[in-house]
Length: 217
Length: 340
Image 1 (cartoon, rainbow over the protein chains, first blue to last red):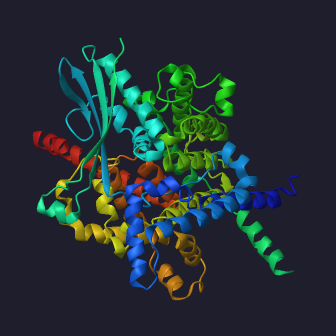
Image 2: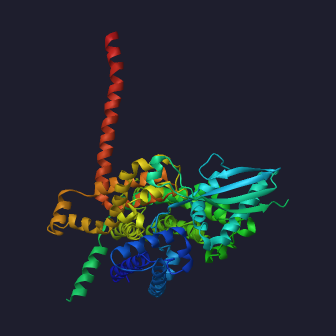
Image 3: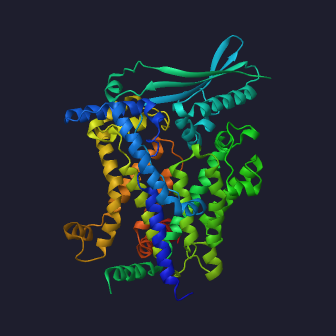
């Protein structure tokens, strides 16, 4: 065995490199789902791409581009799954899973979590991201929480968003015994463009996604 | 011998090379700290209540049961807190260099279920950390600069040799991280089409920013330049192994090879990477990602280079200490002589 160890080791190192490289190679995960194209940022990107193609004489509407992307990425991901299948146990048990899509498409819309409680007839803010109202600030600002909250703005995670709202209402009900209802909202707003930032103006199109939950005591 | 045979013999020779363990020891210390930091902050901040608590115990969702979690009795608060404690203990032992590969294996196996039970609450940081822990399972990173070394050899340092391939795997991992993240930065904000505005918008996104800077638009030109520079830096990592190879191969790599043999590119790579990650760390909340990524940079330097750097610094520190001792002793001497 000791005689063959250098050969075996060289082979195992090679397999490791193949396994991690195949998994890390860019893959259009998410592009195969139709609901991805409902996200405002993605819609904007498709508009931009469509007009860029128009300028070089190729006519393709955002809907046509989306359709092409859905079918090609679906086929690509299917092939990828087949290629990665033999390595799955290695990814699972050795923790060699890869995935480094960091800030690949930077968002132009900001979403801030806003939590209010109703005491008597008045609503009071207890948490608003990046403000002085900082109930459970540590919880919402940790990287683990930010990762999931960042996802749950998307329409496809509606169910999870409702669950987060119920959780926040339960926790707030415990910490504020006088509260009768809790309102949990996403405050959506386009991020100031550099020009708006210089002019000190703010974009108008603001909206809210709100869940109001009665506290059962 | 045919081409494949020659290539295999070359690969065999490369993977059989050995070196001392200073680089992997530094990597181990950094990764141990990253694990403790990641888990301790999740605990202290209360993020555990939101991200890692099962619906049955008051969490917002039912957590996935990995085989390890099933074996331990499911994702109950006791089991999760037990795994977190084990992570903190094994991460500390890893940093101190106690328990060799076994500690790294335990750290990996107790951390993995935490990363898998709620996949929405993690991402690249967790991937990078588990990969780092696996590399520490594969090599003898406690050969030097460790408590293991002190117990075994009676001193903190050792000339014991380990496979040089371990350092190359660390390098391969960071090349993959940067290379693939760079290649996937395909959104228009990273291109002239979006005015190279990606860094500006990333810094203004409430999802990741630590604090908002409303006047950041005044820096839009330097930020556009940094967007292009970040993209080039990240994507450019794919040629770093080649640069390192050319540095030690006279005549290889044409003009670029000759250039990197004349001018060492590694300090510049480190300086840019450190500045970028320091910026991310100060401006954005991305956990221990910046620290952990910087840990991988040690693989750019061989153990011999790290050793020579450390001994040079130690000599300078000793010399400064001697000078300081003499300086503090001399007023007393002069006072004694004047009394005489």
